[in-house]
Image (cartoon, rainbow, N blue to C red):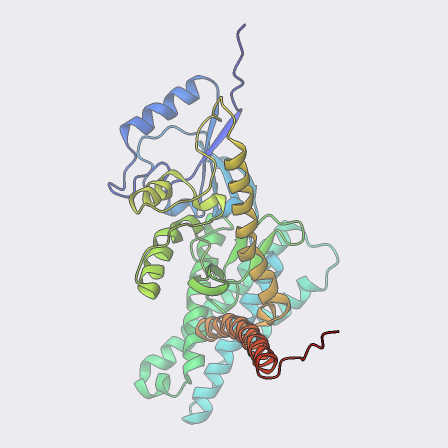
Length: 406
């Protein structure tokens, strides 16, 4: 009796640690041959990565059918045909360009008034008229939106040139700006170059794309959740040891979380002086490279083996251990929800990345303090109970009850 093995229609591969070796930073020849044999059998091979397409430069001669980049936000075929893209909303682009024109004009007026210079004619009023003309329309066609963005970028370019010529005349003019104004001006310049490049190339994605000139560090992270497909915030790599939460990695970029495993192991050793005996991690951490790391450090991890499922089903004891490991790992998933609902980590509205990171750390610190206080109260309660038992026994020994015999 023969069994027909059904091949999948499509296979997705990550780049770092899956196709590209961490040691050689190249794709091994065995991997190239394996992918070639898979495609010969009619299976589609796609690349799934968090990088933008311009930053994918280490695939070499690998044969593939398409790329799913920016965590699913931009998908294209091997020939360059875009089949799906989730760009920044054009309303955000218009508002961001409008804010850039407004802030540049404010800086020009501030320098001229402070040093009693002649105020040049700026283009903010024209940019705002173009912005309001489009915003007030009920139906915004693509051609009209593109023309408006082009007009606003032109006005922004003229104002930036006026401001740069003004600041170049005297070093004191630039030093008169506050630190946050210098930071905002740098973000405006970077935003302008990004939008101009995307406008000329007729694309809507670029590397390190700025979404707000007031928070240039924020990135769009495509998560695919039902409530919000795209989220804006920091990605946090956390670990829990004996109920206490540690923040190992805090980043605003859309990176692959599987890269944090080695970092978390090293931080655990720095904190406690030894390696962990067991790690309960999510499936995304358990790729082949990370499994090799766990094997080298002799760290146990209850996870399903890679490849085809074995013919013999696992024993009941192994199933029980895996079920217990999954239940224990739920603590880290609950930790994020508790941090958002109880310790208000979801209400952080800091503008600076350092401030946001500090507030996130404070939320985890308060959570750990509450954990410590609960354990302390439990210990004091247990000590008091033992003390009461000892005192009661002593009273009983010192004052025994007399028994009368008939």
